[in-house]
Image (cartoon, rainbow over all chains, first blue to last red; front, top):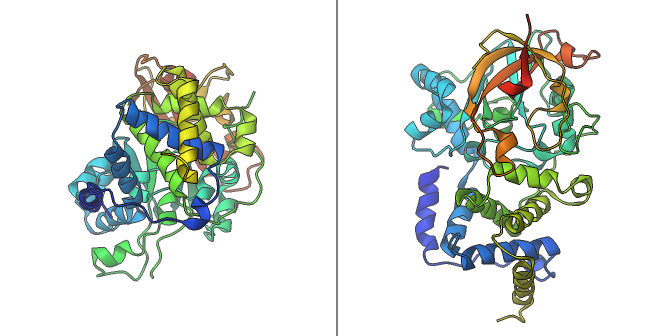
Length: 217
Length: 103
Length: 92
């Protein structure tokens, strides 16, 4: 799903359709932090820092972001060597060429090879290429993942079902600065002649974090 | 002194791979953050610093988005964008609205 | 910019107050500069509302065995960390 999709929903949001009620959540009293969230949003509007429509639009963008965007880039890179080079040089521009908004923060792609496996972590916080992979999974933000991935990557990868042979090196990328990382996984064997759309379906979120592999589905 | 957010290499238990769907209020925190940073009220670096300054207890007792909104609230005070009274009254209004007793 | 690709570097073993983006586990460790990540706003200044001067940020490759003497994986395994140049001391 790309930004075009998000924009088509923006138009609907000009009419401010309400989000569906969730009785189990909404009948409980607001927690302190939930009340603070509402208060901050209301004050932002009251003080002219943004409009209610801006908040709705931003929520739509957040909801629209999904690993499908990243998967499309990966599938294209597998099929098109020129695009692959562009993606390795500048993911944001490569995404833009496909009509996908990768956001303002630069994203760097690291490419798996038969003898190299890449995996992404953020040991200091939870940096993640959200525009191309959607919201990050809870475990990516967990202390257990962030602490262990840099010290025992092979054991952690095994927990995720990725058992690497000894002749495959592991590069762990810790996103500590203003760069986000994504992995270009190896193209699964037996996918010769597949269309870009079909190839994209083999590229999961975890394959682009490095805790998974692209697999035929 | 290795601080609470700086966890690379520390002993860690099993990784819970279960996912939860983000609640609407959690997504709203996310949207608020993007808009405040976009409006240059504060930077992502200030946000990270404000989260770190919540201290060790916050990492143990608060959820991810609870830390975020608490840090954002503190930054609004620090930057002079809002006063404690304004935020407190807006929280009360939100509670009243939620309970169906507000305007 | 004083560093270049291929340089051997040691990360300063400092423990200052404040906000910084150099993880503890690489401080005092030796690595090899792999690439320039970019010139970036200095997070240590930005975190306190000051612009500071943009800094070169380098991708530095650390062998796992350098970081963890008891590392149980393979010899080629590595961690690559993006580090501000002012945290890096050239070796040799």
